[in-house]
Amino acid sequence: MALKCGIVGLPNVGKSTLFNCLSNAKAQAANFPFCTIEPNVGVITVPDERLTALANLVNPERIVPTTVEIVDIAGLVKGASKGEGLGNQFLANIRECDAILHVLRCFDDPNVVHVDGEVNPVNDKEVIDLELQLKDLDSVERRMQKLEKQAKAGDKEAKRQFDILSRYREVLQQGKSARSVVLERPDDIDFASELYLLTNKPVLYVCNVDEGSAIKGNRHVEAVRKSIENEGAELMIITAAMEAEIAQLETFEDKAAFLAEIGLDQPGVNKLIKSAYSLLSLQTYFTAGVTEVRAWTIAMGTKAPQAAGVIHSDMEKGFIRAEVIKYTDFIQLGSESACRDNGKLAVEGKEYVVKDGDIMHFRFNV
Image (cartoon, rainbow, N blue to C red; front, side):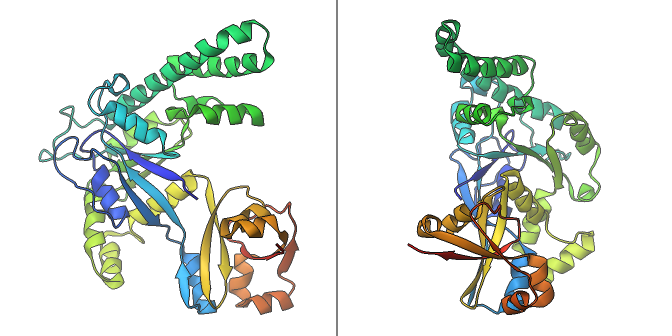
């Protein structure tokens, strides 16, 4: 699925260093603002221990993990909504993303310059929030101007859309993000998605800390945590500089030893990738055979025919049924045949909603 997470933040907070850790692409990372101008795009493998466990049982010819796209976007400054700095380009790039990884500098280092002269992650967050909110407010008011005459003339559809836009305008004028507006009707949600509001995108705040704060965080992290209490957003701690060191280690054993020494069970980027995947409301189902064990990406709530369509459109068109084994049953019993013999293989129809971790076999006829 072509869904993307954009890494955003003020200049020089560690976005490109983090991107380099996440992907095989090597974005330029340097100690000055606007190091990144064109967005770097990386296709990132999503770590999934379940895929390895299945492969150990099936012993396939190849293993194919699922992926997610991560985009490193140019740093933003005050006035971006009015075109200052690289503002217009930044806002265009972020509009194309489906979710946001907002990197905040939560470390003190006099050797790394800060664009505003002092380390204050809450203020940094507010700078970007404000610029995105101002751009959204402009978009909403422009749309309202086009609908106002129709709404006053009694057009019910125009009135419905105008009322939704009014709700967005109200929260944006209060300095809140569009995601704080809760819509329940499917047609209202569909209309909102067509607006492509920047502050309606799901966000994960990534606090970039020094090595000594990698596990418990620090005062900067706590300040950020307090500032997002009412946002319904998630926060995670990562040390981009340390993750860069881990990424340069060549063997699994070396990486494991490094992590054990600092008290971590896995690289922070692994957790970040998984969080990005979840932030996009994605989940995984598996196909398992001697040719390959493969992870497939679907949106949460996807039904069986559409899940089959991810493999090939003909499978969706000619869908007959899906044979489904729960991951835990497959691991416990060790094979598809054992699951079948023990009554752990379920036959599901067109209305079956695929669960994360399902092992699927589709029957279809074209």
